[in-house]
Image (cartoon, rainbow, N blue to C red; front, side, top):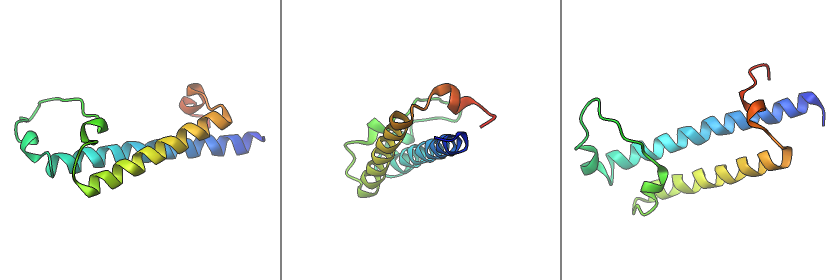
Length: 97
């Protein structure tokens, strides 16, 4: 595998990682303004809470379930891509790529 091709794989993985994080953010935002809005109301400005997509797995919201499916599928693709190509954390953090 050429260095150029490997770099493209790493750049692609980074883009998928960004998309994965964006989907997670959208799941949380939709959940907290939709089905879980009453929970959202107890938070005050400056409050901090660590959200996790797992909190939304039992949601009855079909839109959330669609996004969760996409989130999971993207996670599977990323894992396979990393495994197939032996992508390391060092490569992902290497700003010269």
